[in-house]
Image 1 (cartoon, helix red, strand yellow):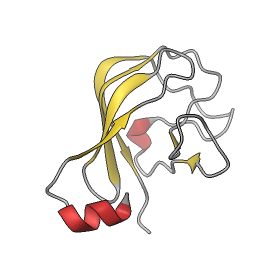
Image 2 (cartoon, rainbow, N blue to C red):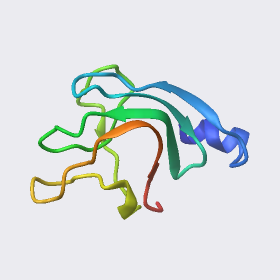
Image 3 (tube, one colour):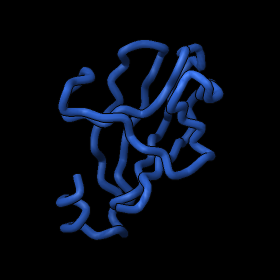
Image 4 (cartoon, one colour):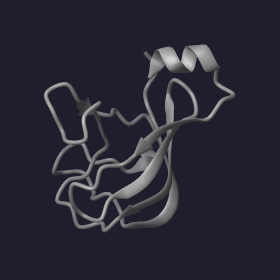
Length: 102
């Protein structure tokens, strides 16, 4: 991902693919806006997951090669532990996920 963004620069919006619906009616199309920002178009989630976060992986299912996407924007409401509030229901919205610098 990072090497693609370096080639195209930050002005390009690069389609990365569609979210995998493992459960909870998750769907949407993921775009890279910069090295630190992903945008999910037409994002859907039922809001009932006991803990919800964005997982980044090159495979369609979570694998040892993937990881939780760190959330630098509190407005994303990503839960990082069971003490955090649940990710709210989403129906056809545009959601941004921001990575911290570095």
